[in-house]
Structures are given as C-alpha cells and as structure tokens.
Length: 259
Ligand code: NAP
Image 1 (cartoon, rainbow, N blue to C red):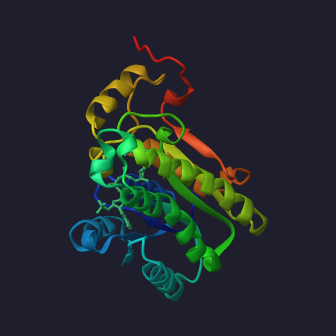
Image 2: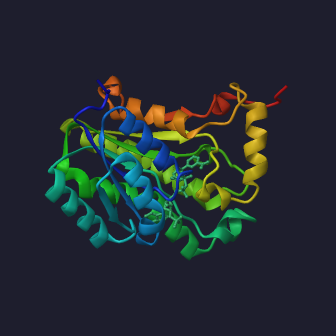
C-alpha cells in the first residue's frame, strides 16, 4: 500500500534526471501515484520521454507556462485522459542568465518581467488551469528558495520572483482552501541542477552549504521528493499556505560558522 495509491499527479518542470521535478516524480511514483509530466517542447523527445518510460508514465505533454493556450491544452488533454487531478507540482523557473550575475540594480525591465512571469505568475496560471480538475483534498506544490527572503549573492531577480511566488502560495491557499485544495511551497537547499548552474557562484555556494547547514550535508532529490510525498498525501491534510524548508536547517541560522 502506497501513501498515494489512487492519486493522480501532474508534474511540470522535468529537464533531465537531475531535475527536482524528476526527484519528485520518482518519490510520488514509489508511493503509488499515477503520473503525468509536462515540460518545454524542446526537452520532450530527447530528455523527458526516456525518463517517463522508466516509470511507465504515459502522459507526456509540452507546455511553455508563459503561454496560456499551451496551459489550457495540457489540462484539456489531462481531462480527456484521466478526468481529474489530485496533485499539481510546479517545479520550474527562468531568468535571463545575465540577470543571475553582477549587480541586482542592473536588472532590465524585460528581464524582470520574464523572470516574474515564468517563475512566479505561472503558478497562478497553471493552478487556474487545473482548477476544474482538482478534487477536494487536492494538493498544489511549488519550489522556492531562501533567496526569496534574504539577499543571496547572484540570485538577484530570481529572489524577487521567489518572493512573489511565496506570496502567491498564500493567496492561492486562501482562495482555494474553502474548496479543500491546499497550496504549499518547498524551500529547498541548493541542489545541482541545470537551472542552478545558471546562477553565478553556485558551485562555491553548494560546497559552502554542507559546511554550515546543521545537518552538515547537501540536500538530495530524495530529500525534496520525500517532502513532496508528505505534502501530496493526506498526512499533511491540515497544512496550507506554508513554505516548508528542506534545507538541512540552513535557514534557521543567524550566523553560519561551520566547524
Ligand atoms: P531544472 O532541472 O533546470 O528545471 C527547471 C525547468 O524549468 C527546466 O526544464 C526549464 O527548461 C523549465 N522552464 C523554464 N522556462 C519554462 C517555461 N516557460 N515553461 C515551462 N518550463 C520552463 O532546475 P531545478 O533546479 O530542478 O528547478 C526546479 C525548481 O526548483 C525551480 O523553481 C527552482 O527555482 C527551484 N529550486 C531549485 C533549487 C536548486 O538548488 N536547484 C533550490 C531551490 C529551489 P529550460 O532548461 O529549457 O530552461
């Protein structure tokens, strides 16, 4: 018996086997969920379909979350195939590379719009798209980072986007709570992924993290996947509008000196 037997989950954001979305997919699958994957069209054939095949996932559809028509199409296809949905996972973000280096003050208007649109507004857009399919007891999960609350070197406009994302979680949770739908974020410590490699200085930050975090190790896809299982299941039935830290305790520190 899995914790998610009989539950259906649609996961946005698998780029490759290092993606947090992939870690979540594996964890939800291991607990019995029926999965669907959605990613940018350019990633599907080479990257996503082979991974989907590993888990026997049959629903793989393209979606650029900056395009409302593509969002509507994914949920139409899901409705045709499965009818309803219990778990929606939003594990994607984008900022122009030049905005993840140098000074935040140099962020362009275009770069700001793009980062906020893809990384923050898209949660509201896909949740609205999913709404007719979400059953009472459904769970919406997104991914955030400490850079939403603290100034982290080079995270820049992505920190502002994550702050908007976390505020969106609270507003969506307040809106959808009466329908029995929960909305939460996982704030993950640094994980080596494609998106993370776009942030200048990530490698140093990653190494530094395990010297300082109370658990003295980096976070893994399994760590994040485990928290996602909890948020997707009835075990977290009373939790909504929260940011859950999966960061080895890093965010509790006032001063990080390590050993
Ligand atoms: P990832 O493997 O690179 O996944 C991010 C995915 O988002 C990529 O497939 C990316 O495609 C996709 N994406 C970008 N723009 C999109 C759009 N318009 N429509 C649909 N998909 C789009 O990186 P990840 O680290 O797992 O990121 C997943 C989430 O975790 C993000 O929200 C990230 O901010 C968050 N997070 C990551 C860390 C970390 O340390 N890795 C820590 C905390 C939170 P392209 O590759 O083509 O751009």
